[in-house]
Length: 343
Image 1 (cartoon, rainbow, N blue to C red):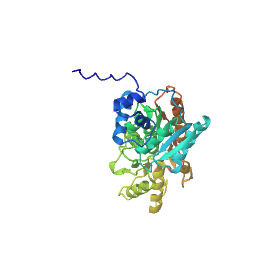
Image 2: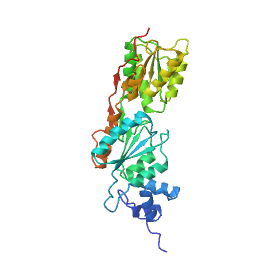
Image 3: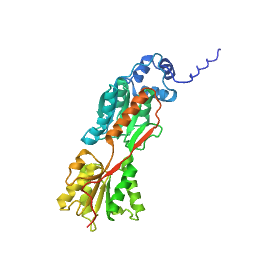
Image 4: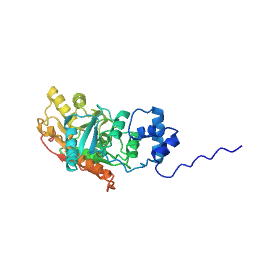
């Protein structure tokens, strides 16, 4: 009796579609559907093929098809001037390179579903700019395995330091805000933060706390509130803070939206800004200079961040090596009329 034949060794390097099909024990058309982002494949089969691609890589047998002249831009939500400022930057680079934009929105969520990834793979854009989101490792791997580069802009979680990302100096912005208020003479200073799981939120709070510590003014835990980066959260947090027996004389709101909420709470309670309460925001969105009084805030260069992320995508799509995987642009204090010395 003849012994069973030895299994064929797995080839070195990336695998072609026929090789993937043989290893997975499925047909070549099935592997082709997965590679090209088609959804009509059983979930278990898709996962098996994706695992093989992640493990070995994928090599096309023919010259790679040209990518579509598009940049996919993914937002957790498309509203307000935050998104518009970033889009203005991405669009500037896209226009320069004659690329179109495809916009996707997650309705406030930070992690896209499977459908979004499959749609991107089917479109085969130049690349993806993912704004204030946190893709899973599997989703990122699926894009990279199809030669679709992705750049995280203002990532919601801790960015993968092996992957390209663009952000602002959030820690230094928080430090600058505290130094400004301490320099005016404030000692009882509150802070309204964003969600704990957001990297930018933690960095702004940590920088703010460091500034107070350096000045010998430790942050009172009773003066810390989480406003969720929402106007309503800023309003509700400020209402609680101003009702304390010893209310703060100043508030650092970790984005301009929450600062607007602080303004609403102060107006409802008859608290004057800046005579009774100094307020500092973060972002310097266009509305900041039109609040009454105009808002002192930390400027985040949102348009420049969009430009930087789009340029990284274009360079990666052209096969270039990035000089920097992580770009962090400077923030700066913009002093207006919402801060003054305490009474």
